[in-house]
Image (cartoon, rainbow, N blue to C red; front, side):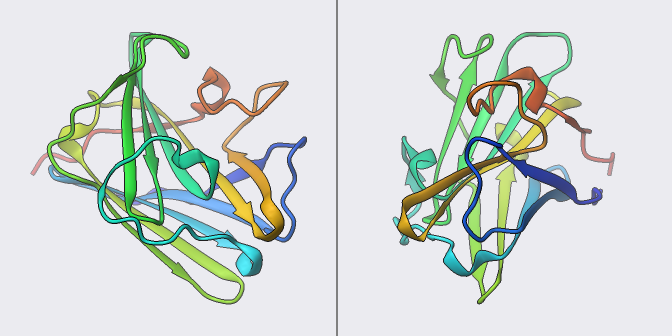
Amino acid sequence: MISAPLSLHAHPDHPPAAIRSIEARVIGIDENWLRLRWRIEGAGQLVVPAFGGKGRADGLWKTTCFEAFLKPEGGEGYVELNLSPSERWAAYDFSAYREGMAERPFPREPECTMRKGEQLAIFDAAVPVGGLPPLPAALGLSAVIEEEGGRISYWALAHPDGKPDFHHPACFAATLEPPPAA
């Protein structure tokens, strides 16, 4: 399953310096991996975190980081995934909107790869399906983007009124279906 590209929108109170657009998409899902891609146009000033070695880390959202939120049907709980070009990552369970945060167990580490040219950057992530909540699930794809000079912009499929908040139900604007049966 390859989804059509989904346009992310910069939060109006935190515009980018040079980034022109960001698209996110599901590029595949099977019984083992969910593959996600973010495409950044105008990436000449993009700050890419240095390689940090694989492993969990908190606070990845303080610089360039890519995020996915999954909320299974019929409940208030959801999962947050933070994926960094440094190859660090985090996964959290929430029992309800910004409540009951706990580290989510994962069967193995996600694979994260950043490719950056003069004006285009591509971030790919392969996330173990065994770490995902039950599917289908509402899906929110987002990005925190740092550019040279410390400018931070917040990108999501949709934004609620007020400050940037990727946890808000308005941001869960897509759906992730289960992998096709083999």
